[in-house]
Image (cartoon, rainbow, N blue to C red; front, side, top):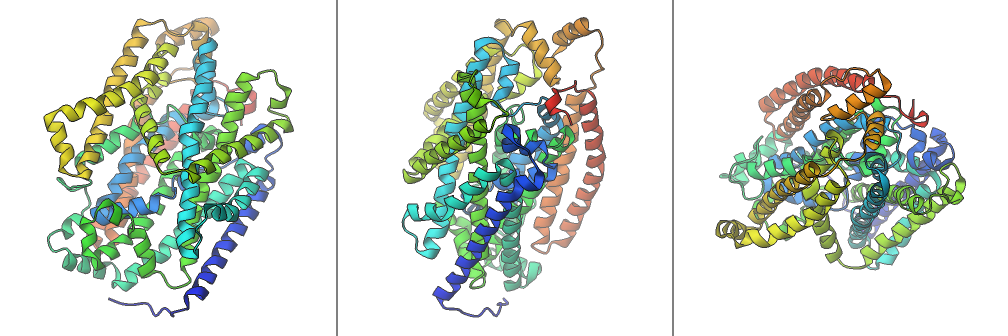
Length: 626
């Protein structure tokens, strides 16, 4: 095994260099973020501050959303799983995101952007009527802030402390906050969403740079891809084929085919029918076509970062074979071991800056979108006549900035509390995932109404907790849980699938036996959103009223099939690059060539489909037109 001739530097000197690197990164982030709105000329008012004047290119928004997904827990989680799985770790993220994001791009993005709305909860003021619409809008906004944003803000801030604390001897969380928050708050305060997305691109570049250095060092130290593979064979004579496998290994203790299937089903169902941070990236895109590009760019950027993050772990598996059977607590230290063993002294600052970048992107995104949601979907609904909340007024932006500080303060409170709050948030988020299929139905079926929404939201938690109590009483189920912690996780995913099925039966029945929304509400929604799926009676009503409607192509089926092509294309590229890292060049060439063919088929189909989506869209409100 080769060794790079790194000069051994005194600890203090090395970490002074690391601190300087991090300081430079923070200052550059502030400078770019603070002047982003001027670079884009986003304009004044709410739309300029929260949506950057709807001027963001699709590729910028896609990269921004990808790095937002790279929170503080990603490096220890993914590297730890790679240590006990090997190359099939790719299926953990491919199953969760690939097809789901393709559906967003091909079936929903154009529709979301063309509606001219500003936030996800605003959708409900169009889809439902009367007081029910206002209730759903306010509830959805408060739920998103309390459950989806504040805990993640706290997790991001705590992750920042865990990154900086051990290296620089920072014990107090307040010290970490004092170092990071002033610059972070300043550029979001000044530039709004434009500052968020432009610094996200910088943060992505830092993450990729640090990961490339780490991967290059690991490959050099182990004699290149072929040398690394030989060391893996020597260290794991009975398990090296599992570690370097292209596909999930049947019977694997942590990530077998059944787990991959569950991770494919649960996150995919409902994706695109409701939006959160991803919606801000769609609404701020230059055009509906640019909005459709956002999930594609996001998938590419995210997989590049995750691939570069996880591949270096193979070097540890070669030098520390015991990690392949490590407990969860031990394997979570894998990334720290990588940095300690393979990075040159002083270059640690780049890796720390990358970790800090992943955290900051999550924090700034939640701060900005949380404030926008609170003003647009809570305050404005409670105080509809307030001049202070006029979207075109500067006072509205200032109220949003103050709301941002309030949401940030709640996140700091979570950080200063205990990890148990994260577990509570995870449980709450998990139980409402049972209602995910409803989010597709509210777009694709005209009979979905306010009462079916209530049934979905109320039934979801009951089904989740009910199954959590009932299933362990089954002898077979209890035996499966007792096999191992990994098996227990598998059964939890299966429980989620069952929960989705049972909850869907309930809200579907309610939608069938109760009256739909008023015809006027449904006609208005159809004109505004141009939904796909089962809207025949409403379309006939609109046709009778207006006398002229463009034909509706079969967009739902076509978009889904094209999404399959796109998912296969991206997955083949990821798997091919994974095989390249261990010197299996024949496998790599075949997979990469297959990916290139898939891309050549997908891209023209994508452009063709998105044009049909645009052509079938009614004229949106004037302010949303491009």
